[in-house]
Amino acid sequence: MHEGVPDLTAAKRAATAEAPVANAFVECRARLRAALGRLAAAGSSDTIRASAPRELAEACGFTRAMMSAVRGSRWAPLQLYTRDELYPESATFRAYIDGDAEIPLANMLAETDMVRRRTAVLVDESLIGTRAFKPIVELSESPAYVAAPILVEGRTIGFMHADRVGQERLVDGDDRRYVQAFCGELAVVYQRAVWGERIAERARRARIELERAKAALKQIDSAGAELSSAFDRSPSVAPDADDGIRKDYAFLTPREWEVLDHVADGATNRIIAQRLSVSEDTVKTHMRSVLRKLRVTTRGAAVARYLEIGKSLR
Image (cartoon, rainbow, N blue to C red; front, side, top):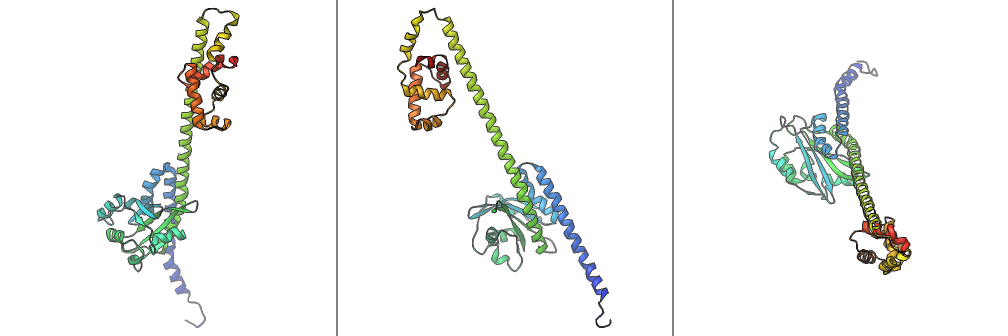
């Protein structure tokens, strides 16, 4: 080879050697996108938690993947997936995970760094003895692992760990990038599912309250109809009979009439207390007195009496 002339053969060999690596990276990212699509279609947050480790492991060829939750100053493994054909000896480790283990976020641990720096980590053979939680290392027999935080609104709510125990090669920098990319999208998918569930729950509660309101109105209508029927059945009275009715109800105080006004408007005890600048206990006391004086047992019946004769009595 002449001096100064590029070695095209060597360059070609290098490019050829790099091609499989590049192809593997592209293929893994494609599998990750497909995995995240399946998780997004899963719907519920529970299903996403249960399926995410398996989807990650199968997409990237990991032996194991584990999803955990961060709880204050500790983290707790939630879901472990193991490819038993690669490492069939995970029973002890799985029992530890299923035993509601909680691990402190102590100084020097890789998981603590993930919470602080919000980035993925690679704990290789040189770091496994000092940066990993010793009981987990001993039980899992993991020679090295990668992990990434699951971030929601800038806060770490959990982790995803993965390793290649039982395989010829260990996890590397590419694996760290895979897990970080997966967790970034997983956080979006998971939070969307959680928000959807919250909205659905609020809608369910609103429907229940609406049904209760309808039932209350129906009760009021029924009580009003019964009262009207009772008046229709009563014997004719002289034109001044209202004076007798007034005597029956005249002992409601002005404040009690005021409370009853607000009850008829649909106000709760709290709202009435705010409007009248009194305590809720005071409102309850007035309401008990009103029920007793009107000879009824429910707010609905009291309102029915109010609607029939209340305003004409004052």
